Amino acid sequence: MNPCPCGQLGNPAKACRCTPDAVLRYQARISGPLLDRIDLQVEVPAVGAELLAGAADGEASNVVRERVAAARVGANARQGSSNSALAGDALDLLCALDAAASRFLQSAAERLGWSARGFHRILRIARTIADLADSRAIEIAHLGEAIQYRRVLQTH
Image (cartoon, rainbow, N blue to C red; front, side, top):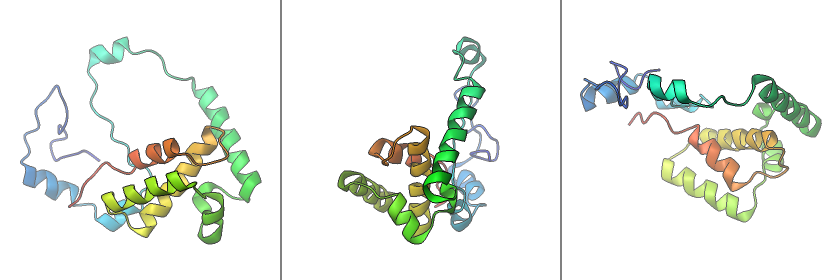
């Protein structure tokens, strides 16, 4: 969704004409519990034509597709399902964290006011990020990346 009714909030090329109250009302149209059920919330800021024209090519799609396929095969071999299906004891076992990573995640959860659902979604996303990096353990960097995918809208 757009960040505000006019769609220009945060755009360096065009000024947003919405009041702060209008932005809050607009973003509040999606309730917190519904937003909590959306795993990945990625902000895509406006990019100027000059930057787009001069940007280097990213990673090739076929390379990414192969890495994703390998991560899915690995997850299915490890647990018999995708990471999104992990729950209960399986989630605790397969997304176990070392002490430093656990402290990092608990601190973020408290600071950001996550529900239990949001906390568990971060663990699943971090497990997937670790799989894509071919890492057996979920590291702080994987948690940090997962957290960034859950911090777009502030509906309060």
